[in-house]
Amino acid sequence: MTWQLSMGFFFICSVINVLWQRTYAQKSKLSGKVPPALQYAFGLIPFALIYALFSGNIHITWSTSTIIYLVLEGLFIGLFNWLAFLAYKKTNVAQFETIFQSYALTAALLGWILLHESLTGMQLIGSALLIGGALIAASASQEKKKQSMTSGAVLTFMAATALGIGLVAEKAAIGRMTLSAYFIFGYGTQVIASLAIGARELTQTKKELFTRHELLSCLGIGLLSALGGFFYIYALSKTSNVGLTTIISTFQLPLVVIGGYFILKEKDNVARMALASVVAFAGLLLCSL
Image: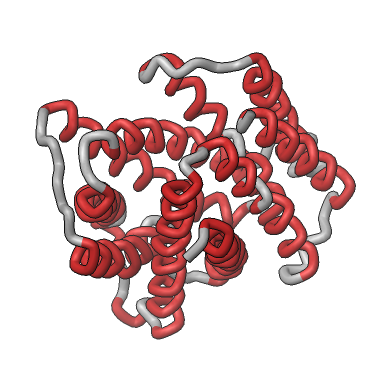
């Protein structure tokens, strides 16, 4: 499989996943902590086991720092999934995706501080545009009460920050293990964290609420999340060019915005959201240079 085909599959999985997650979050009767836990348990565990079974080469360099990175990665990505699910209930997909791009800024800043990765002038300008686009999108949620930002926008910022922290820990962990080992231990800690976050609600939720629709939706979304991550990592391994792969992946933002407009019929504040998307997209491109 070529990297171009792999990126094509990545876009398909990611866009469908976002639109499906938004629709499901609006209709789900389960507590906000339960669906993310089910999605990760149903999707990531089977994928990790199947991939490791067929690929082999499971090797990890165990140390105290490796364990810390795995714990942090699992915890913060688990928090991201919970916060993102709550945000989907309160925002439209265009607003969520635009504000959510601020995760790249969090990851870049933490990578610079903790991993000693350098930031170029273009990346700094891109970061400023990311913040600008996120603020424009957040202002689109302003209601007649003249509140500066809705809870949905705040939740999206929190989800983006959690993912940014999780990705930095993930990057540090991946450097200490093979890809097969990462899918076992990295995905495993994410599943454990998601289940721990939702444990109380899982045990207290009435059995009749776990309908066939709820369970199948969680299964589908979980598998799409796992597959999307795999196709992105596969494309990156084939191109050996992080900048190129990242630039191409930014096209998910306009695709999701278009999907939200035409498929979900979300047409509130269209002009402002279009401007926010363009500004954030420009920022993402500059951050990738």
